[in-house]
Length: 265
Image (cartoon, rainbow, N blue to C red):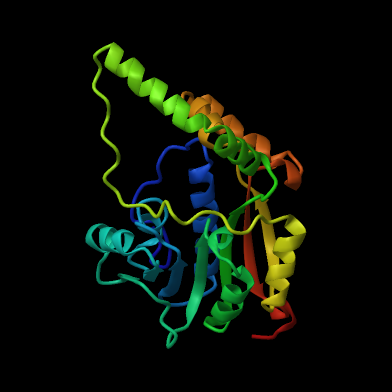
């Protein structure tokens, strides 16, 4: 491996029903591309890092000065204990006295009441030539439609109750809940269309220079079916690449300051 090559500290997990590893590969590929253009260490802000288990741990490496920010105290404690280190810190607020080469929003913007305001504030912290990498659900795509139906009909609750009853009937052990903290109270506040996303980005003085599709489906019910087969999970992310943007569940994108290619900072 060349000295200036960036790579994650941990091996990537197998793909799951939500296209999680596809998202990780996208984020890491954009970080690597940016790293090839910059000498020295990358300064990276991971906004909305949560407990660090799903994204942060793969962004932390010896070549990156990593800052994870989240507002959920229990998640921050877990992230610090499991993934903190000399070049990885987890904070409750964005440090306003630093600049960052890369800012990551992995499934975060849809949880903010005013995502455009956050992008505007963070754009001021972006170093010259820096970029922002984001992922959001299609606000009216298969994921959000399925989740709406799930909430209305309480399908997940019913399925979970039936599963527990079946295990007890067969005298099988009911698995304990995961011990990792997660902010379940932070739901989706914004439901993006592609046009809405571009508008929020433009109003923050930014521009989307790369736009990709994530997964086709993958919510509570469809995810429970897809996870039974690696072939199905792989098919789910491959199919999304050939579908129109409105027909997929998730989008990935990269933003830069508007006018960067014209030689402006």
